[in-house]
Image 1: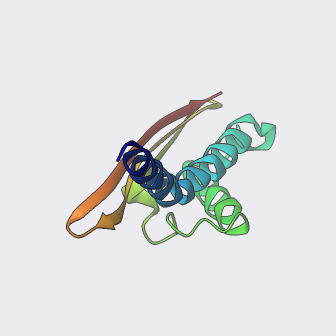
Image 2: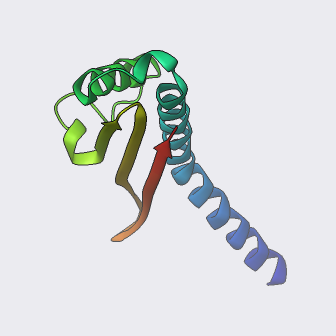
Image 3: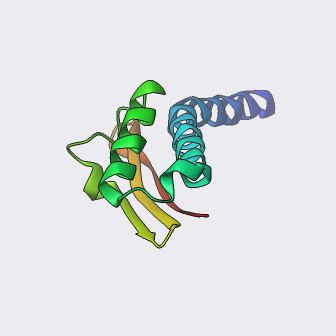
Length: 113
């Protein structure tokens, strides 16, 4: 009985890990992109629209399909105040676990130079 319980718990932890892994991979790619844009000296004189296009292109190269040109303003806010770039990213992702039970993860990130 004890061994079966331990195996069930391990299976649940493994299943949850497999469901959450893609979300955190996407989050890692978004962090990398936003950090690169904020640290890019060429972006300091760019307009928020140009910065946004650069972000979308970089995310596309990294195969991030969550944030696109069409829905960019839903998830990302870009400001450039005299060379001080501020990027705020807020999004959530959801995956079915089993039945009507879902895993939901929210990401709220802030980047600035």
